[in-house]
Image (cartoon, rainbow, N blue to C red):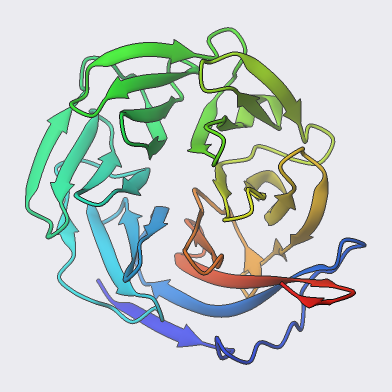
Length: 285
């Protein structure tokens, strides 16, 4: 399977042609594309050195450096990888069985939580728990780091949860796809708020940046929508298509340490990377 990288704009000098700007001064611009020929990119995550992408077609985790160049070897998974997250010691991937856990060097491949999950998709991890969006049971499953179930969140509230992320306040933020919205719970699982059902269509991915802005793959509309932490729309970008800055079924996205937005697109067979800036009266964030 061939993986190529196409860089359109320099990461240091960004032209915002085709970007979107709203009253809040937020703009988004295309940086580069990772083409995954013949693949089906589904989930992504980034750490300080690499971008990792799950590829359903090849049943692998593809690894790239932060400029999008291939950094082999890839990691072969036991089943069909979907969501992905990472901490300082492990890479965790959901699949059609459970969660597969690898060491950072790709060794391991231990399956956990196989009996606790129905259709696990997006997942997040903190210092004590693994948090999984279980589409099949329509709830969020809270596991220990070893995979034992300790709690559930959102049963009877969520429909088709596709992805989940934890913000700096410990809030559990869910791409509630069946309701066309984002649903947020506190760290104890109490419902806090819902928003986006007049804006979103079948959201499949959710991430937060360093400012707790909420970034959503608005898959039904083939675009990305950025909200503030209270649910107010700040900007959106993308249209349906296969050109740079366009989407055709964007999936579980991520935000890296530079606040770049990384979007896997299963139908276009690529991963696109974007940057945004916030301009204020005193300068640029």
